[in-house]
Image 1: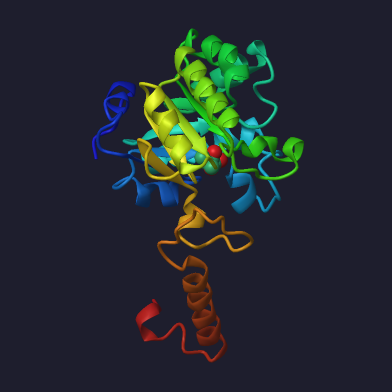
Image 2 (image 1 turned 120 degrees about the vertical axis):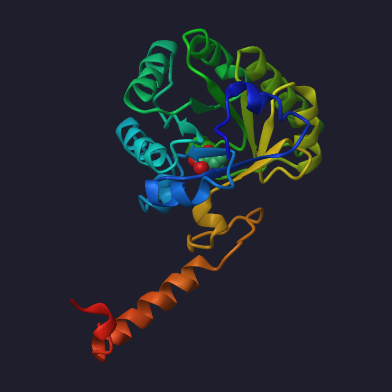
Length: 262
Ligand code: KIV
């Protein structure tokens, strides 16, 4: 697949849906590049790979390390890096951290969570040469402040507020927007209210593309499977069976046989 540009991503608005998937390392990024338009180095890595209960303790150093790995594995794929919790609290901090991503990795854009309240930050970044992906709706970095992961868009008031968020983030210069955990009909209205592609996760099928956390959609992450996740393989079972077979063969000395020795 030819590497996307901001322009070719924008052109997919209302056209062929964009395929986004998270990637955290070179190994999986290499496998995903054939099918994905965009790889997201999501701070969700702090949960599935870091073993933490939420994304909040992810750091800039970790995001930079994982972004470099992903870019090495899929050098011809458009890569977006999540700005972790606490790294965009004000314009100066946000720009310094986003510049780190651009200087220290080949990432194409950064993603920040938040609606209208974050529009001035998005403007500050975009006017300084940083391509920004917005993220509205359910905000994983707000999990402790909100006391859990809460689906959004359940009332007309929330729907209008999401539309306002999307339009503010677009006006601030973001080229794409992730919408998470939002009632499908409301997410469709949000997508129709802006001219940039809106990528859904747990937001139904009326948007301009989808993103899933790869360890969820491959069935590798067992602690919690959100309702919106379709598991395209039973990764956990497959891995466990393979490792159990290996363990058995080591114990009964059937591995290595003559095919696997020098
Ligand atoms: O961190 C992440 O993987 C994300 C997705 C849930 C969109 O932000």
